[in-house]
Length: 483
Image (cartoon, rainbow, N blue to C red):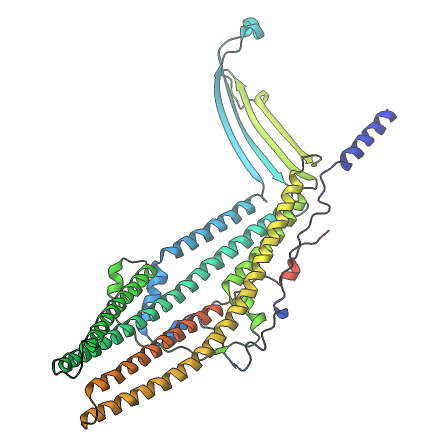
């Protein structure tokens, strides 16, 4: 007996020594601390501002834009995709939660059979077998693995919910930018029409001068070229209006005729250049993509914990009760009842490296999630700084361009006065008019860029996203251990 006990103990020791182990496996990714990302010099000399409001577009000053964004948020098909993905992630979380709970099943069956006579002899005859049963199974979560898997699924579901909110924020920004582009296209159309009128007048005056022998055919052909070029610009501007309306139709989730119903936009007023204080730290909670990335890092950390518990022993409790009868007997009679109850223990000993490969994959997924979070964080902060720099440069360009336009306007007025006084010709005045139209075109382009960049800055600052009570804890508290 003693030899048998020693042999059993030795076999158990060898089995435990050969058990699958998670030793040496760990993730390598480390989330960046936002406080280490410096932007004091890049964002210096800016006035402090509040974070964008949820309806920031109302500050641009066009009620039609407000209505279009509301329509897009109601009908855009991309939002349906984002919402469906969020529901799918919530369903996965429900599956993970159900795995933590006991399972009760039941079943019944009736079968007709005739056993072989070679086995039962004269007792072999055709008969019915009837049975019914109910079972109970519960896999105990001794090490918290099932809870970790559920928490990981919940994290992914919350990330998907934030993604759905991010889709709405992105859509509102895209509608505002497309609307501003439509307004710019209308301005370009006006300027192109004015240039065509100027070129036609200039060409007609040149024709009269050629007929009078003052000019030659060279000037006339130059006038023809200017008219043709102006006609091409008119067609190009008309196409830009159609393209902007088509883009808005897509964003609104409607057919192309919907874009034709959009009236000419008003002149939009971009907000004053300002950013919230303590930007690197607070930006993490005000950008939906960053919040979603944080949730995915949290979820990946929980997945690692769940994978590690698969290396440990597991215990489940099972019970079954049922009734069975053969032939025409009563299945609920006492002899036809059966019962079964007992716990079961399992321990992974050798699985060909499956558990280690699974854990290694979870570690890699965590590193991917961390890298994506770090990339999003760095990109977000630099996007804000770049938009601020671009807007500052645009303001300087716009100030200079407006001075150039004012000078061209004064030159046009002086040229008209000279013509009316009989000092200069109207052809000379039209040449000055061409310079004014070019200056107006440059001003309109810079103003359109200013509105577009203002919207991009609002989006870079989160587009009105507000953190909620379920915002994740700091990432340092959920970083998986390297043991």
